[in-house]
Image 1: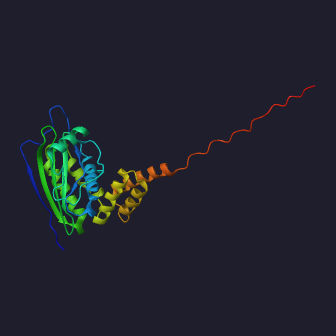
Image 2: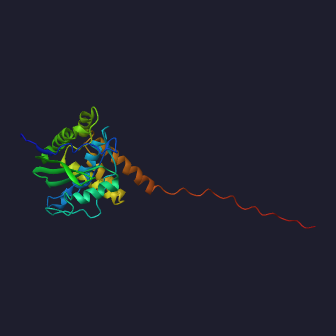
Image 3: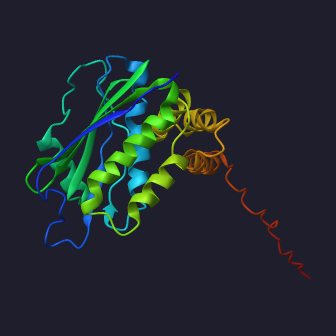
Length: 253
């Protein structure tokens, strides 16, 4: 079966130039909005955002700041969730993370067709400087992610360091699962981790990396959660045994 991925990009002027006071453009990624109308795809919100965050982390021209964490009550099943492409909210999130730019996205559909809208917002004036739409097929999930990363790299060429584009594209493939099912388990694992349910997180993440030897990011996240779970479950060390108190016998004449 032949499938196609289309990416439409609009960029205005020198919008990706770093602010004068910053030697490198700082950027953060927010959890994607689940605009599919289906709650079962909610785990992709934090899962996909975490992958994009780590894809960009290998850049020398961009400084990735903050951390992708699952929302306590992520909006699901709404065509236009509150905050979707809300530039003011993105500006506030960027300021909190110390970022000059914020990447926001909406998952419009997943199966059988994948469609994800992505925007980058400049924090200084809450202006959208980059917009992209990616579409592909759920049964070619990793290729859809890889193609999106490649096009986003083209858009960010003005602020990426030498060799960053190829480095990000090559690293992205190793940071992504090859199936939708694995991506859903990965996202569910991160959601559980961010809810401090490390036992469920470990179970989901182990499913995410099952049969995914090249999913380097998934293996790394699984190891982190398993270590955290071990520290929680490790029995407290027993106190050292105390020597019996010696009593002094006094012999009176």
